[in-house]
Length: 317
Image 1 (cartoon, rainbow, N blue to C red):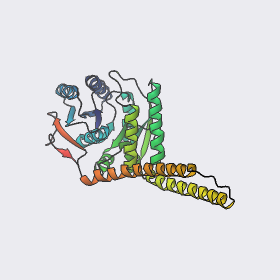
Image 2: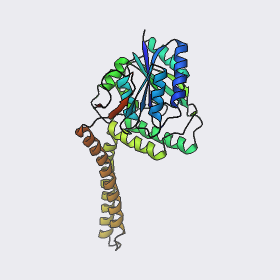
Image 3: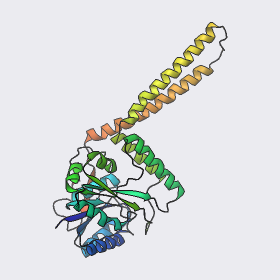
Image 4: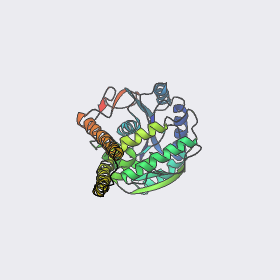
């Protein structure tokens, strides 16, 4: 019988663990789907891992791990993929904003031959206006940078075991799960869903965290920002040529205006382009530096008793 693994990264989700485990277990047992739930506590500062341990003690099909510190959602997803043993793996949010009711549809499409089943958002739910605007800006920025439509995409998706193995085999450390599943290819189907309200707690994503997330993922997945440096250089040169011709014509006509206004403007414009270009290049150098160091994506400090193998205290490159 095929096994379905559900990976649930969690950061300070103490209030949601028991509820999420109960809802998912009830749904999957009702549908007759063999399953395991894999919770990953991403260095949570509350009792998230304690709640995971309690859930695992009540249900042997629930297991989990805790990071030694906060490594980020991407690391949580890949740690979950590493611990998952299912023939198919679903990644979803621990707060159930990704509706569990869609899981049977994903499972059916997988049984019919789909290797990737994308969850496509048709509504973002009752989010605050600032959060909707920042999320919208994030997805538009990412879509432009990686040349993929990310506006309705999410981390809510089902992956066949062969796709999971491909992702786990990638050597890079700065990963962007959502884009990598597009990049990997394979036969893809989609299901639509509406984002649900959180039962407990608040979203951990702010405008600045989304922008930081966008910049990090853009520089780890796309070279377009580096190409923009060349474009800015060409614009700067063109602007300089125009000003040079204008200045020369006025000088020859004897109407040159004394002063440093043009010089100052030119210096400011070129200086701005140079600083922005250095900043973009700096981000890529930082990504190269992190890759060359070879530090692990995450470090696991503790696991529940039902996790097989010598995992606790280990790390994953």
